Length: 431
Ligand code: GLY
Ligand code: MN
Ligand code: MN
Image 1 (cartoon, rainbow, N blue to C red):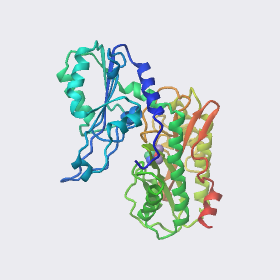
Image 2: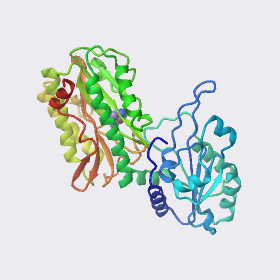
Image 3: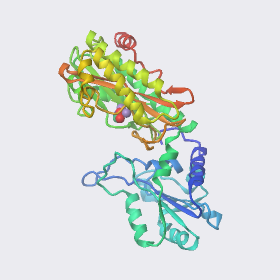
Image 4: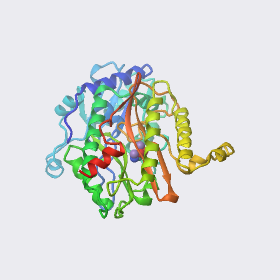
């Protein structure tokens, strides 16, 4: 692990909170992710299933967690199955968790090798008085997954082998629980944000006309890795000039031009938690008057957004408010006309040409974290606030994105120390 070990109390509390949400005589299974293949014998870097990490804190493939809080024998109320290590594995792949280490790390007493899973699972399924079997599915509203995960293979296998059990969806419960961040989680998110801030400050001093976008990407990677991050939380967007208007630009292969803006949408991962920062900066260290005008308009929208976020707020109503505020900024920037706005087609509002994405999303173990967007906002949720204005006809776009915690009387900005004012950005770039 690159990160400092996490207090197992986090995972113990998470399991306790899950158990409170279950029906009586319930059995829960959560699988790890697979190591995904690339080509020939190549593999992608392992990324743990977020629910499994949330409940057990194990960062290893071929792990299964089974919870059966009402089972007769206490020994099997929480069971963790692990890939059995061997001399050969330790020579080729290095250290894997021992049972003792897993107990220490997770707070789960019963740790077995995964080869024992079918037998033990069968015993629990037929010798308990199971009434509800909770299985996990990827129910993220934006997920478009074309490969079969270990979890979905398991669901198929389980339904075929035990067709008459009663199954329940685990996902809505996990979404509800994971969407509220505990103190431990907020600390981890803060660390991801702090590493991101460090890298951004480094980049402010590095950027000048002629540097290539991927050189800037390398600066971020360097600073992330040397601070205990495993790297980028998501594919970084390093977009100069006109590409700052391409919302998901990830080629990052153009030289940065004198007089252009550079949009950086980059976050560090830390201990499986993610930061999601966007800053837009002038390549040559000084915004033009027009760039500054648009930049400050976006910054004002962000500050208005901060004021609106509070427990009880509904995302889609808040987003509508932000669209309205952006609309009036666009009028101020003379990009749209007040009279035309009055007569606009309600289904095709004019602001959409310049602000066409959401105002934010929840953030945590996933970058676009789980949590129902229709539900009211709640204390302890973490949201990104990311307004933008993209002016294709002028060849530049501005987005500013911070990560905030919903508190009783407003928000706590996890990125409050990351430079955002025009003057501060220019000053650092020219120092
Ligand atoms: N970087 C992805 C996002 O801002 O949602
Ligand atoms: Mn982002
Ligand atoms: Mn975001």
